[in-house]
Amino acid sequence: MPHKDCVLWNVMLHGYVKNGESKNAVGMFLEMRNSEIKPNAVTFACILSVCASEAMIGFGTQLHGLIVACGLELDSPVANTLLAMYSKCQCLSEARKLFDMMPRTDLVTWNGMISGYIQNGFMVEASRLFQAMISSSVKPDSITFASFLPSVAELASLKQGKEIHGYIVRHCVPLDVFLKSALIDVYFKCRNVDMARKIFNQRTRTDVVMCTAMISGLVLNGMNNDALEIFRWLLKEKMRPNSLTLASVLPASAGLVALKLGKELHGNILKHGLDGRLHLGSALTDMYAKSGRLDLAHQVFERMFERDTICWNSMITSYSQNGKPEEAIDIFRQMGMAGAKYDCVSISGALSACANLPALHYGKEIHGFMIRSAFSSDLFAESALIDVYAKCGNLVLARRVFDIMEEKNEVSWNSIISAYGSHGCLQDSLVLFHEMLGNGILPDHVTFLGYIICLWPCRPS
Image (cartoon, rainbow, N blue to C red; front, side, top):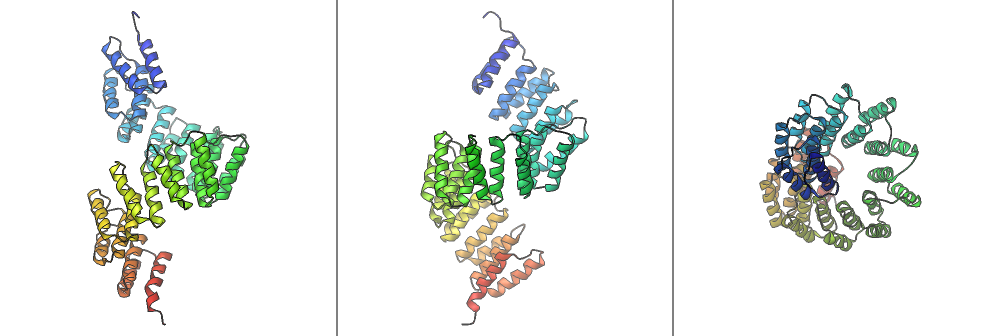
């Protein structure tokens, strides 16, 4: 071909991106840079989308410099793609800096920034930006609301959820299935089951997305039978459940200890070739564990090609809660060797296993890891550590952990009170109980249960 212009390069580049061939797309862009053809806004928007999907922040930052040099930084499509790239690479400060310096912000820009905050867990910032958008000349659309409502659901703010729902109705914002599903999710997480049902029942058509939102919400509210009814209705209507639907309904069968149904769902997953999905693997291991079939849970776990922290945690907790503390500790160690990232749930699960053995040397190992890895300030992990030292007969270390805690909640107070009580130190437990009240922490049923256990040996014979 004698001459390749920018349009032809862009067509080739777009083809690679569309087919998920990121490496070839980057290679094509670099080849274009070595030619005499200058990239335009379309070129940059295309290659930036690769950086966003592959989290190539280093290359993306270099592209940003090149975009500035080409005078295209404030071009709306390029700026919007840059914003998306920074958001997906978890560089929210850079994304916000770019957002604030843009002379013109359109609907795509606002939606991109709000979505970026939510995807990275910055719910309060998303809420503030949404309020600023309402006051601006740019009006939100159904995509804005569908993107923003998860932050309302996460904060469980029923008042804000109702306000947004009212705005949607007053301004005649089209209620597509994604927006309806987002509203259903908000009401379920705010424990307003009736309103969630009402939105679902007002449907003109139903698809898998809405059914999945209903199933997930009903399970969240402990209504497992109702969730299974929706799932059966979905199948009756010849709708094909997707991986999220199946991951949502599996906890319902676990909650009902309906092993037969759980196995049927597992068969459905295998039938449709969805067994490689990470979230389904985690849901299956959890379902089998809660149904008392740790052997099947372990089989699913072993066959998973990829495992995230949630999946590892599910196995650690399952073994620990089902009387297999040594297996729980073994999984915890395997998790570290596999390079998976520990979180407070992993630590608490492993410590619970140490307490159940009891195994002081394992507890001390994990305590050392907590100090090295900055987990020593996590309330639940520290409370679990107190429990380990107490059950291993070392009240001195249990008290030392308690005393150096920067913050104490009812769980940590209950742990130390129970620790002294279980060793027959009733007077020390009473002193701690009064200290707990003096610090404004109200006792709960766990506190009183601990006291009953303390007083039981003192009962008259």
